[in-house]
Image (cartoon, rainbow, N blue to C red; front, side):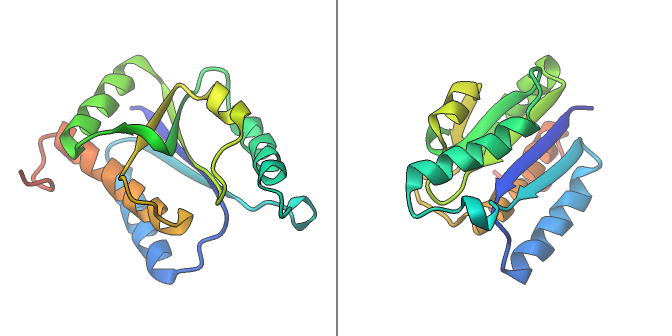
Length: 157
């Protein structure tokens, strides 16, 4: 069973996002080992300078990664997939990799060191979503992918 980890920056302020995230997290245990880690940038490291903020966030993220992790950034410039294509991609990676780490960046995106470490980038939409909402959208899509892989009736085509 593949391990799927989601690293995300910043707090969730919407209860409906927390509730939805918790629901899909419970559902995922049937398909993968799922772990979610949320990091808040310490106040002393917060800056009005985007590059300084991205660098501080990168330092936090890089400490969480193992050499063997396959790192996938959720990035507006990443490859787009339909749900079925994403399911196939996840299925193929699950056979090749023991751990998939998805990362949702902060408000300014990712520092170059994170792009350099990443193995892939995916985009869930051409639209921009808040880092809070993308958590819920992402976890629902991961759940959908696993139901597609297992041939379960959650996804309709």
